[in-house]
Structures are given as C-alpha cells and as structure tokens.
Image 1 (tube, rainbow, N blue to C red):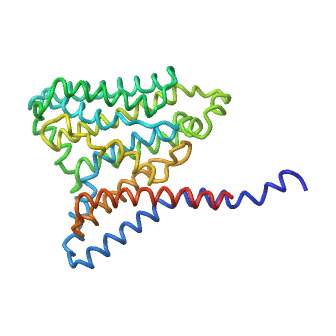
Image 2: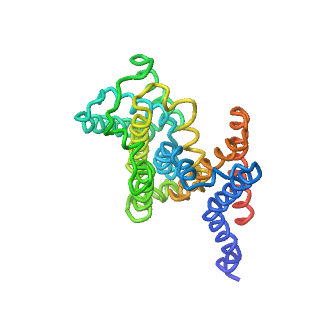
Image 3: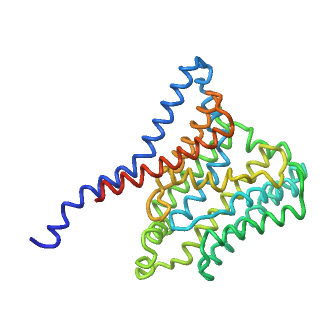
Amino acid sequence: MTVADAAAPARPPRRLARRFERYAPALILLLAAASYLGVVFGTGQTQYLTADNLIAILNRSIALGITAVGQTFVILVGSIDLSVANLISVAAVLASFIMKGEASMIVPAVIAVLGVGALVGLVNGLVITKLSVNPLIATLGMALLLQGALSANFNNFAGSVPDAWKLFAYGEIMGLPVGLVFLAVLALLAWFLLRRTRLGSDMYAVGGNRDAARFAGIKTDNVIIASHVLCSLAAATAGLYLAARLGSGAPWIGRDGVYDLESIAVVVIGGTVLAGGRGGVLGTMAGVMIFSLIDSVFNVAGVDAFAKQVLRGVIIVAAVALYAARSKRFAA
C-alpha cells in the first residue's frame, strides 16, 4: 500500500471539518433566532415580531458590523487589532469637530477621518511587519496613543454634525435604514475582495501559512499592512456613522470593549479562525446577527445588564469551544 493510499481515509473527515466550519455560523444563527422566538412567545410579547422591530434589532449593530468587517481582514492574515475602539472615538470626535454643524464641511471631514484611519492602519502594519512586534502589543500601544491624544484635547462632546450627515444614521432607502444598506454593500464589497481578487487570495495564503506564502512569491508584509489599513478604514467609517447617530463625537464613544473585543468575538463566532487562513465576511455578518439576536433575547427576557455580560461571555466561549472540539474530532 502506498503512502497516498494510507493517507486517503483521512480526507473525508477533513472535508467534514471544513463543512462544519462553513455551516456552523448559520446553525448558531438559527439557534439564536429560535431562542428569540421562544422568549417572545414565552413572555407573550409578540409585539417584538414586527418587521420594524426586526430591522431595529439589526440597526443597533451597524457600527459593530462595520468594525467587524475590517477586523475580519486582519484576523484572516493571522493578526489582530485592538486599536479600533479608540480609533472609532477619534474618528467621531474629529468628524464632528471639523463639520461644526456645517454641511459644506462634510467632505473635508470625511477625507480627514479616512486619512487618519489609513495612517493608523499603516503604522500598525509597519510596526508589526518591519519591527516584528506582536500584533496584540503593537495595536494596544496604538490604542493607548490614540486614547492619550483624545484625553489631552477633549473631555466631552466636541462640535456637531449637520442634518445632512445625520441621514447616514437616520435616513432610509426603500424603507430600509441607510446605515443598514451601507453595511450590506460594505459586506458584499469585502466578500468580493476576499473571494475574487488577488489581494483576497493572498490574505488567505498568508493566514494559512506565512512561510509557504513567502516562498510562493507573495509579499507577505504588504498583505498584512494592507489588511491593517482596511481594518482601520472600517473603524474610522464606524466612527463617522456613530457621529451621525449621536449628532456629535465624544472621547468615550468607542471604549469599554464594545467595539474592539466584540468585533473580534463576532468574527470568531462567525467561523473565522483566530490563527488565520479560514473564514470570511459572510460568517462575520452571521456573527453580528447572532449578537444582535442574543442582545434582544436578553432585553425581552429582562436580564440584568451585568448578568447579560456574563452570559454573552459564556456563549462566546461555548461557541468557540464547539468549533475547536468538532474540528478536532472530524480531523482526527
């Protein structure tokens, strides 16, 4: 019997592992939806089953979804970004400070915010690749730098955004919130980049095996830098959205672990492997919807805010443990 024949029986289980990783987010999403329906009917609060309420559930997670799309890129290449929360705060404050309620300043503000986002991502990527600093340390250092710059100059709401910019958060297109439509378009563009472009395939290759990707001629450093730039641009965009939603920007908008840790959590619960190389943005969108439904289940059930955080943590750990256990079992 040849070596190839001996290895043949291991292939079907590995295919099962890949199928499990692909469809697990959808199964978890169905479970979350079933839990939501169970709580709604169990408590007799069927008014929460209207189309408007379901749209409102998703609408509350738009900023998280935008941030998570960017976080997907860096996790796919085997990196991570802990600076997104503070960058969101910087973006919101900078946008409202520049706009100062004037519609004529919208374009300069958006350009400035996206420029800062691209610069932060570029610095993160360069520090990680050229200085060989661990991504956790590099991006945490950037987060502290951004937080310090904000705290030194602002301690409350700064400036305001004009009504024209508020349409980003409160406008509608064919009955759907503009922000929700934007998130859907952003997710489709991210999917196209990952699945239909050279950069996307390089991201999967670098995340799967960086050394092999380098030997194959891929400029791995450039791919990692590009992923961090895209991640920071997404975070800056989330800051622009929150400025439109709140009417102004404040130093604390993105803090408290809401957008850095939770964006990582929804990416992972959506099936993207923290080690990189497997996953995608569609799974991330499923993760965002799972989080939205879980929050709604807790709200309808009247769960205490502190207990809610504990339960969310348990659900995240359980979901990731399920991925790991099932993948090991199939691949064994």
